[in-house]
Image (cartoon, rainbow, N blue to C red; front, top):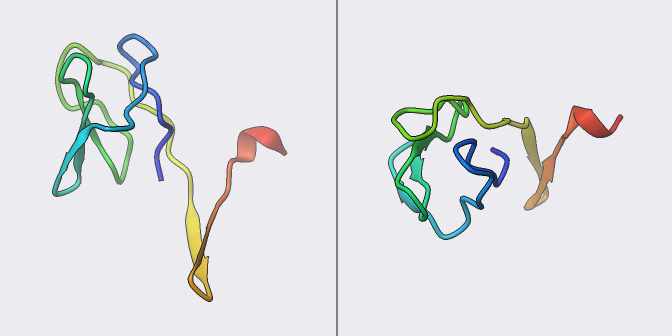
Length: 68
């Protein structure tokens, strides 16, 4: 899972187009790798946060260590 934040301007990635392992910011077109959070093209240069997930009995659990 990745954080719902484009590192270019803090906008949401929600609603962005997903193609393969990439999501495109719907505001300015920055793309991020869904596996690593790495920014793939301008205008974003910094990665977005990624979080480990696990699926148990059809429920998706996301761990965010920033809240420990």
